[in-house]
Length: 231
Image 1 (cartoon, helix red, strand yellow):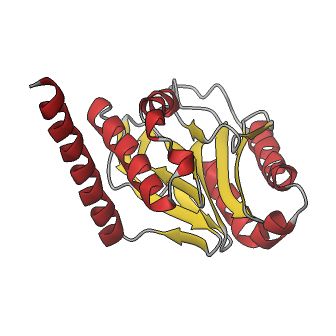
Image 2 (cartoon, helix red, strand yellow):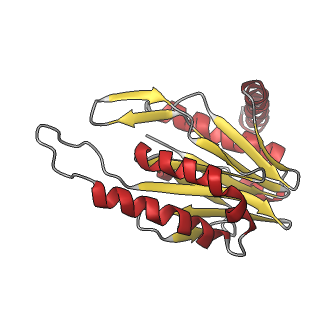
């Protein structure tokens, strides 16, 4: 199971992901980085066929400046992803003797950034459609997306879009922790990137540990309030 999620904050955007890759054909899982830089002011993650996402990564590394400087970032992303999808769809051999359920060449791509004082969260679907989610404030892709959306809804009363990216990092990590508890195929290490007017910053392992401590303090504070109200 894969999950990549992003949330809008008052002063930027936070995007995060798990690191577990499931190979259905071989019946195994292994860790891999799913969150990648998109230039210095954005980040992206993907879910689906690794061969497709590897080509997307190579393309985005080469074309990040053109994508981020385009008048319409959504169409610029689409223009790069579509040829990659078409190539893999055309060369995909669906029926391989002796191998069942080996997967498909479909992949979802989600990118997020901050430009001219405004957030953007854009998804490119396996059919090449563009989805804009900054106005909604939260979006997730991957097989764990439905659970991530539900977890995000359970945190909506904290009004994340009106809080800082520091709080946004804690909220995203808390969602990832919840998915780690409920799904065996979502797991650590987690990746986080905060994006604001200063650019995109991919958090180090130590910084993610520090955010994790904030999450623990947040959860302890909730338990203390519950105890005062109901115990």
